[in-house]
Length: 138
Image (tube, rainbow, N blue to C red; front, side, top):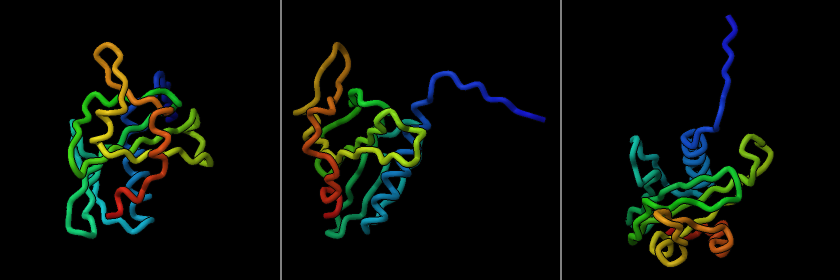
């Protein structure tokens, strides 16, 4: 029996879940002790046990395009970070490495743009946070 799947619009859940595992893998690769959080409606995707004994929390945001990143549910908290994964229109291309931006959540409230009811990050405003993995290695 042949099963044919006819996808329409790509699910944000598959890019979100895949990005959480991708970020977790990167954290392991640089020696950071991290754990995935599970649940349907969560604002914390990854928990890090820092070397100094603190717990850091991470919310992973992913976009397949270069478009802005929605941050409506982000709250500025101490020791909470947003990792933005930008796939540059090449989500399906495994040879293309996405861009990573590691942003303290307290900074999000300063750099986001408001569009009607939406809070969004523009990639042009987060360039200084590209590959700042050291923020999570405390």
